[in-house]
Image (cartoon, rainbow, N blue to C red; front, side, top):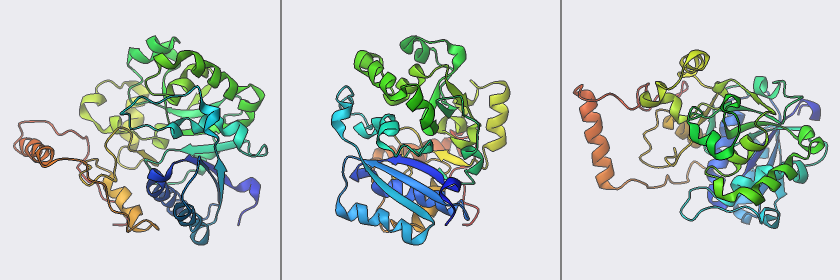
Length: 322
């Protein structure tokens, strides 16, 4: 294994419900980065022995050191999730990283569970964020005024997506980053729509580094209706990486583990699922027969030239190794 200083530190968080999808995400990371060594810190309030054992088996297959870090949810007493949301309290765990991770871990790449890694992450890891709290990629809807009106900071600072973060833990510890986030949370629950993502954008609006969007290629970058809102360099970046992004983020309520997911890159997820320790985990049902028929009808209209396709690339783009 590589020396500790050469390892790429990864941070992820999950409860039992998301362990299979997190395990597949990690499989895509390892399979897409041969020759790299990783230290993975897994934040959790508690997992079943079965899920813990399944994740530990990754160490037998890949050059990775996996550490389970217990999160005391009493530290998040000022946090809440609205009833019916597909978010869980685990979305806040990353805010605790400076305190719960070992003090000699000064930088981590945080990855959401609804991600597929499709290329090398070493360039992301080596991005210069020494004087910043974190590096992140612009959110697909950053142009909407609502973010800046709710959170009360200048629109020119931008709004980033928190699904992929290069976090400077050293900076957070020196600048009381976690304490600042918790203070804001305790006083502003009512303005939050995207929970910890809103918190990170507000607290660090002038202390973040904007990174290349290939490291968090979101759904909106593929939608024709949203593409018209992008301009200049951002549109050029989207065009350059649409066919081969390094990190694909299935943000939103439709996930690639849903049986009827129509995302063009859903087959990438399924490729890594078949090569993972969770290959036997069944996909989750989501859409009713009525919804499926509506989707078939929509595509029929597209084929007849009566409607524009939803996505800017063909449905179900195949993984290069398929």
